Image (tube, rainbow, N blue to C red; front, side, top):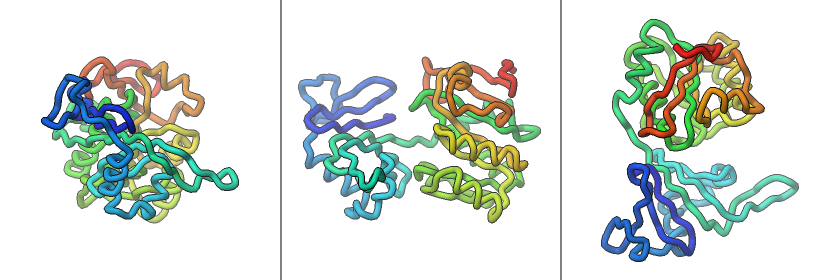
Length: 267
């Protein structure tokens, strides 16, 4: 199971092995006619569980379109955005939830580790569409680097999805934007390797550039289907990453399609 979708007034379903499976009173079913219909009360109860009945305490994350439980489950949120003076203050009348189910797949990054990190660490970017294993691979890589290298590792966990990742060489900064976290952490925590998920804005790419040009190795991910997708992004900055990994969008999550060097030559 990779995600569960709740949309007010519509059938509750999950994505299981890439296929849509509905939730009925008697369990999972492929028959949409038997499915439970999501109500506003269902969404409210789910929000209460996720925030331990303290929605106000999660408002800063809610404003950014998601919640993360203490176990690292990320819940995407859609509803009415409330603005004051061009600044979003909260989201109300929540009508849709996307519950992303995190997975721990031991050694899912072994092929990547053997190919790129046995002798040295490269600035590396993993490219794949959503739900294709980027975060799962980054988690496993973090654990391998912690176990096999005597290097200080900083994880910038913007959405709280790395809650289960820890180790004697790992420091974690949660719920901060990447640029701020990196600027203060390089000075205060002296990392040798930085791991972070989903570079998707100019500021995110600037943070990666700061790390790379400060002598820190950075391992990150980005949405896309190919090297060409990456190069066409307005915020893409060349010469930040020394290696690129493209995951296969047509196969199971975590399947590597290709490895590339900093000049986009396949290796």
